[in-house]
Length: 285
Image 1 (cartoon, rainbow, N blue to C red):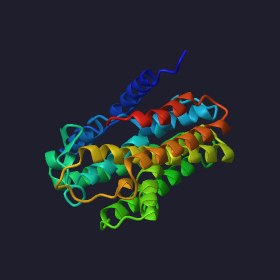
Image 2 (cartoon, rainbow, N blue to C red; image 1 turned 90 degrees about the vertical axis):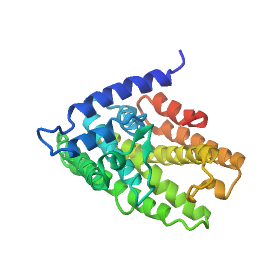
Image 3 (cartoon, helix red, strand yellow; image 1 turned 90 degrees about the horizontal axis):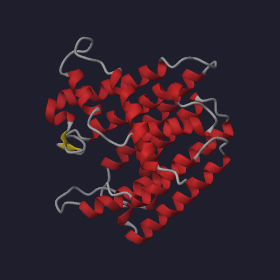
Image 4 (spheres, one colour; image 1 turned 180 degrees about the horizontal axis):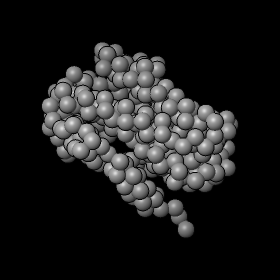
């Protein structure tokens, strides 16, 4: 029987959101409107790809995904912090995300900044309370996510992106793709592996898979953005600044094939991860 990716994603998303929403700070423990702003950010929808990858990675190295759920939620919380800050007037100045008012637009710019800050710190709070089943595992999880999210990871990629001057280079595009997109996919996979007891070779395989997945994902994003771009939008770095759509699709296909090849080194079930990266070629949103 063929693997049903849509059913798999729907079931995992439901599990993740149940865990995610159950532990959100409420108005009794957190000053309003901050609690509402954080909930608004996390409940705005999305595919939950990063936490799903975290759980799938744990299984791909022979582990159980259920104990890894808090780690997966931490990744999703941090991802949503990046979206909240991306939308701010000083960044992309977006008023809608997934058809809903962005956090800053609904609650004010100050609360938007603070809600993002609160989500960022909440992610590390979740990681810090992960049970220490092996000596050093909690510190390894915290360090992994901090490196991916910080100046040498997502934030560094964002800096490169907002400083884009309309003069693209292949090196610049690859650096932004790596740090703005691939690094958090890689963190999600490595965190799942670390929590499940992966060895160095398995973590290297997960890293390779996630890097190639991240590039394929961002290339497809650029193709989708080009199809819906507004004439008066500010210039944004895109691989289509240097290549044709057909060349971009071929580049994405090479990354997809490399991601699938990396899975061969893993001992557990990898069909969900294979199906996910292969599905990116048919993304519509």
